[in-house]
Image 1 (tube, rainbow, N blue to C red):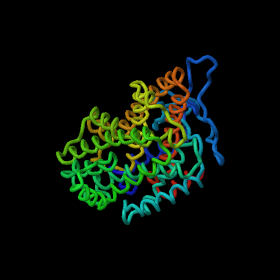
Image 2 (cartoon, rainbow, N blue to C red):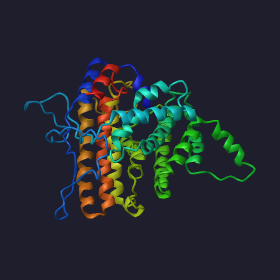
Image 3 (cartoon, helix red, strand yellow):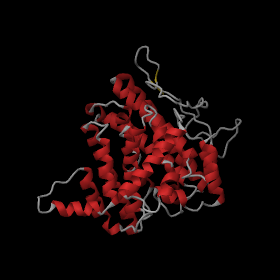
Image 4 (spheres, one colour):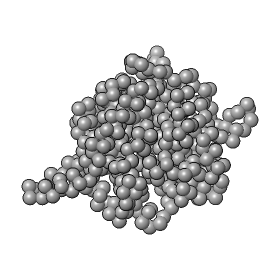
Length: 401
């Protein structure tokens, strides 16, 4: 289910919706605010290089709890606690500015026609503000927000059918044409204008091209190439999802977890360093052990998205808790607990491996890994307060608490 359809779908069964809401609004953040670094003499923890002006720091984290812990006065709590760090900063005015400019851009390129009020309500600019705390430059944050919205429009326009009719039989063709603007196709002179006409008629392709061109103002060509690679992987996952739709399959849990490895927040996370104004060298980003940590973070973050979406999803939709419920024959509550346990396993593994990498790698690697940790904390906060997952009055209260 796509971003916007999750946001405006009818609530799930009351018991499930209440459980998700309790998980969503839980103020506890058991993960440490800073990513610990071990193994380097005199090293403490990675911290934000420079706190941006106007920073509103997050409150202190709760005491760490184990994976999927249920903590409440020493007795079992029916609501599990997600292992995640707190957000580094929350600057509502900055988030609003990015949101306003993002909606203007969406209108210019033509994505989400007639639904821009929904885009504004979703607060994607707020997500980017929370997830990238190393800068308060609205232009850099907007560059990341444009890339994110363009990526998500592929799902909403092509896959889910929220904005236009989904033609899963044509999905591979549409994704290939969209990819031709991500990694620009160079056709012979006779045929190039035909492709360009097709691209200009597709708002998604226009948005992808515009966002990547704008990113080039802040990113090196290596960083842009990195994003192209991550988007190509995501498009493979969209094709996989198209097969599920056309064949009527409900994937087994192992396959869906593999899908989440490929269809996650990784393309957004790939922009941590250009948004912050530095570059993680390609020889560091490409190391297998760094890649492993990077994709673990992406998988963990998107599983949070699955958990939070559970309160509004159709029971037949693809999400990890729903698939666990079907495959294991368990209750929705138990499926949520098992999903939290999977999430927390990924988080603890990332935390341990990232700390080791940061302790032995160059400063840019430590900074990037810190950025991933901060990104996950910001994303968790956004899910807790955005109107995408709450009734409007709940979101307003959470966003200004």
